Image (tube, rainbow, N blue to C red; front, side):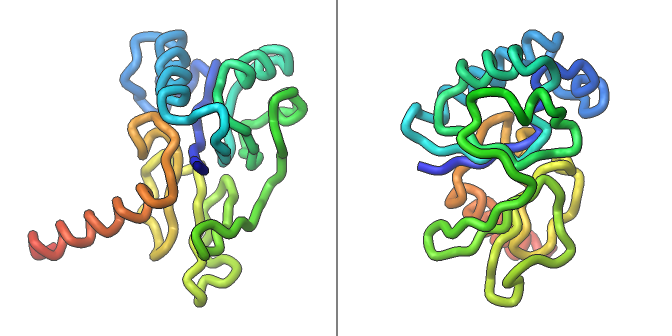
Amino acid sequence: MIYFTADTHFNDPRILRIDRRPFGSLAEHDRTLISFWNETVSPDDEIWHLGDFAKGSAEFVSSLLSSLQGRKHLIIGNNDSAATIDASGWTSTQHYKELTKDGRLLILCHYPFRTWNQIGKRSINLHGHSHGRLSPLTRQYDVGVDRWDFRPITLSAILASRRRRTARQDIQGE
Protein backbone atom coordinates (compact mmCIF):
# COMPACT_ATOMS: atom_id res chain seq x y z
CA MET A 1 0.00 0.00 0.00
CA ILE A 2 1.14 3.57 -0.65
CA TYR A 3 0.23 6.41 1.70
CA PHE A 4 0.64 10.18 1.58
CA THR A 5 0.90 12.78 4.32
CA ALA A 6 2.42 16.21 5.00
CA ASP A 7 2.85 18.93 7.60
CA THR A 8 3.29 16.72 10.67
CA HIS A 9 5.60 19.34 12.22
CA PHE A 10 6.82 16.92 14.90
CA ASN A 11 8.65 18.66 17.78
CA ASP A 12 7.67 22.12 16.52
CA PRO A 13 5.90 24.08 19.28
CA ARG A 14 4.64 26.71 16.82
CA ILE A 15 2.22 24.22 15.27
CA LEU A 16 -0.14 24.17 18.25
CA ARG A 17 -0.51 27.94 18.14
CA ILE A 18 -0.42 28.56 14.39
CA ASP A 19 -2.83 25.78 13.38
CA ARG A 20 -4.75 25.53 16.64
CA ARG A 21 -4.32 21.76 16.63
CA PRO A 22 -6.50 20.12 19.30
CA PHE A 23 -3.74 18.89 21.62
CA GLY A 24 -2.93 20.02 25.14
CA SER A 25 0.82 19.83 24.62
CA LEU A 26 3.44 19.23 21.97
CA ALA A 27 4.23 15.86 23.57
CA GLU A 28 0.57 14.83 23.20
CA HIS A 29 0.55 16.09 19.59
CA ASP A 30 3.62 14.06 18.69
CA ARG A 31 2.49 10.89 20.52
CA THR A 32 -0.91 11.04 18.82
CA LEU A 33 0.50 11.57 15.33
CA ILE A 34 3.00 8.74 15.82
CA SER A 35 0.22 6.44 17.06
CA PHE A 36 -2.10 7.34 14.15
CA TRP A 37 0.75 6.85 11.65
CA ASN A 38 1.58 3.38 13.02
CA GLU A 39 -2.09 2.34 13.22
CA THR A 40 -2.43 3.24 9.53
CA VAL A 41 0.91 2.34 7.92
CA SER A 42 2.38 -1.17 8.13
CA PRO A 43 6.13 -1.90 8.01
CA ASP A 44 5.80 -3.07 4.38
CA ASP A 45 3.92 0.02 3.19
CA GLU A 46 5.43 2.97 1.38
CA ILE A 47 4.74 6.49 2.62
CA TRP A 48 5.44 9.79 0.91
CA HIS A 49 5.74 12.69 3.34
CA LEU A 50 5.21 15.91 1.38
CA GLY A 51 7.20 18.22 3.60
CA ASP A 52 7.46 19.91 6.98
CA PHE A 53 8.23 16.69 8.83
CA ALA A 54 9.97 17.67 12.07
CA LYS A 55 12.12 20.16 13.93
CA GLY A 56 15.26 19.01 15.73
CA SER A 57 18.69 17.48 15.37
CA ALA A 58 19.51 14.74 12.87
CA GLU A 59 19.71 12.33 15.81
CA PHE A 60 16.23 13.31 17.00
CA VAL A 61 14.75 13.03 13.50
CA SER A 62 16.50 9.69 12.88
CA SER A 63 15.10 8.33 16.14
CA LEU A 64 11.63 9.60 15.22
CA LEU A 65 11.86 8.00 11.77
CA SER A 66 12.85 4.67 13.33
CA SER A 67 9.67 4.77 15.45
CA LEU A 68 7.43 5.23 12.37
CA GLN A 69 6.41 2.26 10.22
CA GLY A 70 6.84 2.03 6.46
CA ARG A 71 9.42 2.92 3.83
CA LYS A 72 9.55 6.69 4.13
CA HIS A 73 10.19 9.20 1.33
CA LEU A 74 10.53 12.93 1.97
CA ILE A 75 9.43 15.64 -0.41
CA ILE A 76 11.27 18.57 1.14
CA GLY A 77 9.18 21.37 2.61
CA ASN A 78 10.04 24.93 3.61
CA ASN A 79 10.47 23.95 7.28
CA ASP A 80 12.66 20.88 6.66
CA SER A 81 16.18 21.72 7.82
CA ALA A 82 19.38 20.02 6.73
CA ALA A 83 19.14 17.93 9.92
CA THR A 84 15.75 16.57 8.80
CA ILE A 85 16.84 16.03 5.21
CA ASP A 86 20.09 14.30 6.22
CA ALA A 87 18.59 12.13 8.96
CA SER A 88 18.93 8.39 8.55
CA GLY A 89 15.67 6.60 7.90
CA TRP A 90 14.55 8.17 4.64
CA THR A 91 14.37 5.88 1.61
CA SER A 92 14.67 9.00 -0.56
CA THR A 93 14.60 12.79 -0.29
CA GLN A 94 13.81 15.25 -3.07
CA HIS A 95 11.95 18.49 -3.73
CA TYR A 96 9.66 17.11 -6.43
CA LYS A 97 8.60 13.70 -7.68
CA GLU A 98 6.43 12.36 -10.48
CA LEU A 99 4.98 8.98 -9.58
CA THR A 100 2.54 6.75 -11.47
CA LYS A 101 -0.03 5.00 -9.27
CA ASP A 102 -3.06 3.06 -10.53
CA GLY A 103 -2.43 4.40 -14.05
CA ARG A 104 -2.46 8.03 -12.87
CA LEU A 105 0.45 10.44 -12.98
CA LEU A 106 0.90 12.01 -9.54
CA ILE A 107 2.82 15.24 -9.17
CA LEU A 108 4.23 15.40 -5.63
CA CYS A 109 5.54 18.64 -4.15
CA HIS A 110 5.27 20.37 -0.79
CA TYR A 111 3.72 23.38 -2.51
CA PRO A 112 0.40 23.45 -4.39
CA PHE A 113 0.70 24.39 -8.05
CA ARG A 114 -1.50 26.54 -10.28
CA THR A 115 -0.58 24.24 -13.16
CA TRP A 116 1.53 21.08 -13.40
CA ASN A 117 2.88 18.48 -15.80
CA GLN A 118 0.16 16.78 -17.85
CA ILE A 119 -2.64 18.70 -16.13
CA GLY A 120 -4.63 18.39 -19.37
CA LYS A 121 -4.16 14.62 -19.32
CA ARG A 122 -5.75 14.17 -15.88
CA SER A 123 -2.59 14.09 -13.77
CA ILE A 124 -3.03 14.82 -10.06
CA ASN A 125 -1.17 17.31 -7.86
CA LEU A 126 -0.66 16.14 -4.27
CA HIS A 127 0.78 18.75 -1.89
CA GLY A 128 1.07 19.98 1.66
CA HIS A 129 1.94 23.46 2.92
CA SER A 130 -1.55 24.95 3.05
CA HIS A 131 -2.79 23.06 6.16
CA GLY A 132 -6.26 22.50 4.67
CA ARG A 133 -6.91 26.22 4.11
CA LEU A 134 -6.53 26.45 0.33
CA SER A 135 -9.42 25.98 -2.09
CA PRO A 136 -8.10 23.27 -4.44
CA LEU A 137 -8.08 23.23 -8.19
CA THR A 138 -9.53 20.24 -10.04
CA ARG A 139 -7.36 17.14 -9.42
CA GLN A 140 -5.38 18.92 -6.70
CA TYR A 141 -5.32 17.56 -3.15
CA ASP A 142 -3.80 18.68 0.13
CA VAL A 143 -2.49 15.54 1.86
CA GLY A 144 -1.52 17.33 5.09
CA VAL A 145 -2.50 15.92 8.46
CA ASP A 146 -4.76 18.92 9.17
CA ARG A 147 -7.00 17.79 6.30
CA TRP A 148 -7.05 14.04 7.07
CA ASP A 149 -7.66 13.69 10.83
CA PHE A 150 -3.91 13.64 11.54
CA ARG A 151 -3.37 10.38 9.63
CA PRO A 152 -1.66 9.30 6.40
CA ILE A 153 -4.10 8.71 3.55
CA THR A 154 -4.27 6.52 0.42
CA LEU A 155 -4.86 7.84 -3.08
CA SER A 156 -8.17 5.96 -3.34
CA ALA A 157 -9.44 7.59 -0.11
CA ILE A 158 -8.31 11.01 -1.36
CA LEU A 159 -10.17 10.58 -4.65
CA ALA A 160 -13.27 9.16 -2.95
CA SER A 161 -13.48 12.19 -0.64
CA ARG A 162 -13.80 14.58 -3.57
CA ARG A 163 -16.49 12.40 -5.19
CA ARG A 164 -18.48 12.32 -1.94
CA ARG A 165 -18.16 16.09 -1.50
CA THR A 166 -19.25 16.73 -5.10
CA ALA A 167 -22.26 14.41 -4.73
CA ARG A 168 -23.23 16.09 -1.43
CA GLN A 169 -23.02 19.52 -3.08
CA ASP A 170 -25.24 18.32 -5.93
CA ILE A 171 -27.86 17.06 -3.46
CA GLN A 172 -27.76 20.28 -1.41
CA GLY A 173 -27.86 22.48 -4.50
CA GLU A 174 -24.50 24.12 -3.72
